[in-house]
Image 1 (cartoon, protein in one colour):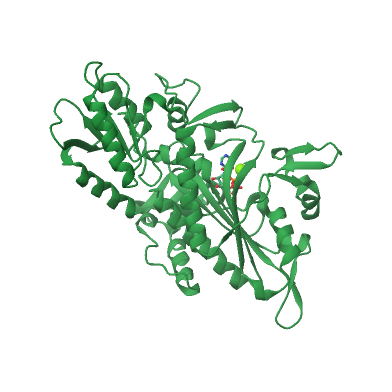
Image 2: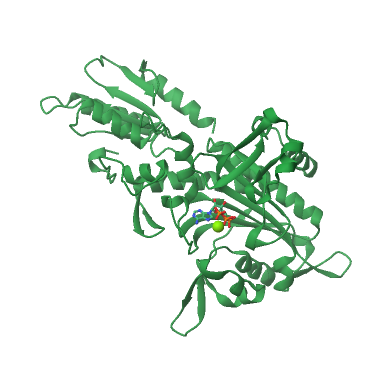
Length: 444
Ligand code: ATP
Ligand code: MG
């Protein structure tokens, strides 16, 4: 891709309406464009990053045996009346009428819709467990949409739903998602901690929020620092390994302010391990048993011939919010450098030739490098403008391409000036550069 031909509308300065760095940067480099309050168009740079996040989320859902479906954005009010939430949900729900005067709504979440799908086809315990997910736009008429796509009204979410017959089986499903969430956030190069959470309007009694630390986050969190030292790298997918893994995380105090109790905190956590800070909620999982299946008469045959309502959980990840969350975690404000993790970067490498009108050799060289990288599945962007060197570097730093190659006066023969964004320059042959990036990609 050539910058001159790309749709990357970069602004000279940070837009004044944006209060936090992710919102500023996303507007500044043209990742998104506001359409109306809390509603955005995604431009090429932002869309590319979001699609890469979406794919990682998808791969990790598939790995635990969840099956992808796609439910509509517009739902009928009937099923919401059955569950009793049509009235309960309140003003966050966007209600619409069609030409026949039927009450419809833009889905804020999909418990009802997925239960309706399940009950029409699954009749026996023999078909359980069922883990279904989709990645779809949601609409919530948030009272205060803010911080760009972090709290939008329209946003992109992965939501999954599990169906089992016993609590024990349902906890197994819950734990599979727990693990898949830890793995997903790790691949996005984020440290997300699972925190005991309130269940809110979804209902139920077991719930975890996955929160990443950030000063600009809206959740206040209280935790034992030692939770950051844990990892799930060697956890297997069998029931008892997953149980142990969740216990390992739950041994440490970690809650948001809704569940915070000062006396408990001070009693349970030693002074030197206490951490009170702010974070961004990037995922939320719930177990709510037969709350919806009972209300919506969703039962299956049991081994002995009896019937019982299925036990359900739901599992959300804010895919669009994650774009902003990664910026909050990775953007170096002081030096105006964004370093996207390679797993989601809009481009793998930026090629910066020093061009002047009388000498196009650097651009030719850049094009050759581009083609060679492409053959090796490395996605590059060439800054083919005639701007000066420092403004080109600045632009590339803002876009946040993790690696850069500079083709300047000092570039002789086949040795290239290569650097990781924000790092030291090295002189390397192209083959070596390809090796470095390919290896880094494979580790994701
Ligand atoms: P919050 O407390 O931030 O409002 P929630 O508890 O309402 O979140 P869920 O219903 O569990 O959220 O939705 C799952 C995920 O979707 C959240 O963890 C979050 O990452 C994302 N999300 C929720 N609301 C929004 C929003 N208005 N804009 C962007 N992402 C959102
Ligand atoms: Mg909410």
